[in-house]
Image (cartoon, rainbow, N blue to C red):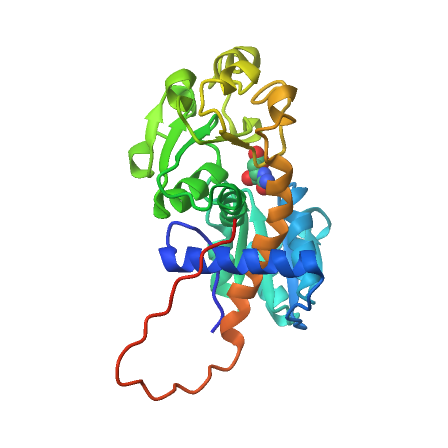
Length: 324
Ligand code: NCD
């Protein structure tokens, strides 16, 4: 049985750590040009919403793992002739695809697909629900610089309500022991923010004060009803991360953004391209965490080794840490 990767919320801490360790190992191997495990799997890359980073990095990840990508774009498929998502997924299953990477505007669409598909389904972002591999890329980027996320104050700033990145990051970072803060206007906070693992701040100054990490979010205007913000200019005046507002955070605070950036709105150029910014590292790490995610999802396809007879006394296995 293979595994799906649909959401961080339902993962155990050990599973999260396993994927992060795998990602760090893949990064080392790719960087050194060391041999990688090759498979002949065929992965459908189903993008029902626009994407640059996630799509390219999933394709790169599949390429490094010796997998073939079959690209599927809603606009040129039989969906345009009225085919349902269920029938599309069943078709891809009987076209003998081994796995699916799926981005969709509706929350829960990859979970639905996993009911009709035979192999692993990886969520590449569904509506405002979750974007698990982005959270892995962000955590790896922070852990490489700080060793661990445990005990760090991490502010997720902006349009939390419409952001799947905010939700996946909050679950992952909180599970690993970080103190998560959600910072943004009242109208862009989820109504049930109490169900998410973090403290809510409506004011940027108190929200990012003494933070070790700031994750700025894009205003998701495509998912927004009108009237949620007064104007983009007003939003930028109150919540933009720029040279001045960055000073409110810790001296060595890291600045992340999942991209695409609306420059001049959630970030100014000085912040986006400044020395605190690790945005390009997030992009690169996207490849390695997606390699880890694909590998992890397919891993159980391998025949399991026969269980060895138990030793008389249990032996402790030291937990590996992600290298700095
Ligand atoms: C995000 C997404 O699509 O959820 N981008 C990404 O995958 N790196 C964030 C966004 O679109 O704002």
